[in-house]
Image (cartoon, rainbow, N blue to C red; front, side, top):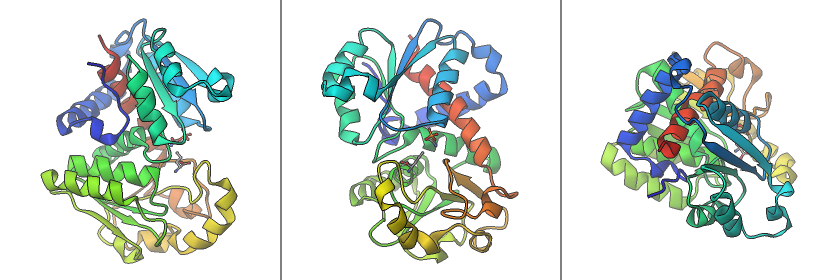
Length: 304
Ligand code: CP
Ligand code: NVA
């Protein structure tokens, strides 16, 4: 049966462990995997901008011996109203996998239902599961494990926060979201994460109180206005102003806490320059790890 990666919960704990181990092997010895996906073609559909996702997937499949076709949604008939289900049915007759970055999570689910090849969620308004894979590898590199690590996410409780909650809960990582009222995570995702956490003893918490940073092994933030929310950017700057990750806020975390950000970042908004450019920051390792974790994901989903 064709496997998809639409949500962090599409991989079991054992698969997460294997994938992250494989990603570390691929990072250490990239030349050993040059033919892992020989002849395979990945299509990538973008309704939103991307630097890391686009380049790491394209470079990744090339490094595994395959090729990528990058498709801007506006150049496809999709942009003129062709149903996403027809697009999926047709593309899956030409290629071996599809990565999509779009708005509605339901569109990603609909595409998967119509596709005979694996669909990968490269970010939608609800989730960013590929990002969480890279975040977990980065935490493992710095702390040895994600199990029982305390990640504190400060900022907007949307796609990146949701995936951290689900992926964290599944893998036994404690995730606390510190977000202002009105911008806290979806109750549905919170309930899903709590259910997962019951099996792994992860603690999943949501608060508006910045004291939530205390005890953090990793402090994480993301932009205040996500793609599609540009019109609200000024209002959001006011709402989130006291949630900036500053050096003073980092001092409330553990002394050896690392700082993570999915990027792109806005210095002086969600994070102070001295934090993201400072010694606790691991943001460029984290960005690099998109490549390695996605190569392991492509291998898991697309290998014969
Ligand atoms: N973090 C991330 O997904 O970056 P891009 O938007 O550049 O792909
Ligand atoms: N929350 C951000 C993440 C970008 C990688 C957005 O959706 O724009």
